[in-house]
Amino acid sequence: MATLGLDHYNIRAPSPLLEQLRDFYCAALGLRSGPRPRLRTLGYWLYAGEQAVLHLSGTRPGEIRAVGVTPTFDHVAFRCNDDAAMRAALDAAGAAYTVEDAPERAQRQIFLRDPAGNGIELNFAID
Image (cartoon, rainbow, N blue to C red; front, side, top):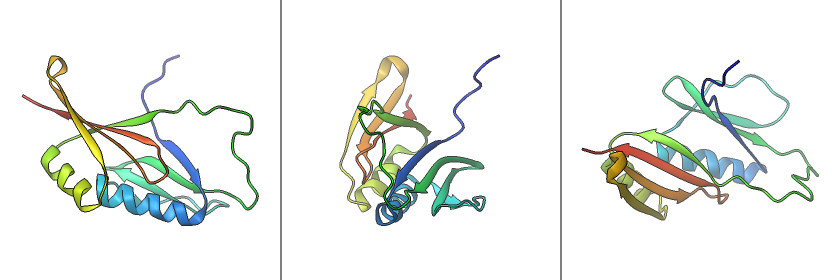
C-alpha cells in the first residue's frame, strides 16, 4: 500500500462565490475549466494540463459546513513555471501576494489567498 500523490482538492461554496472562485483560479492561476461528470450539485472541475486538480462544488440550500470543528487547512501548493507571467496575471486580477526566494531549495515561492480566503503557494524553480 502506498499513497502515490495528490489527485485533487475540493472547495465547497455557495453559487456566487463558486463563480468568483472559478474566475479567479482560471484568470489568475491559469487553470482551465474542463469536463466534469454530471453530479447533483453545481460545480466546476479546474485543470492543470490533463489533470483536474481543483473541484469546485456548490453547497446545497441550508447546508452547514464543519459545525464545532476548527478548520486546519492552511494552503495548497502548485508547481508552476514562468513566475514573471504568473505575477503579471496576479497583478491583472488584483490579487495581493508576497514573493520569497528559497535559494537552498532553488525555489521562488508566491503566497496569496483566493477570494474565499484559502491559502495558495506557487512554486517556481530558479537557477
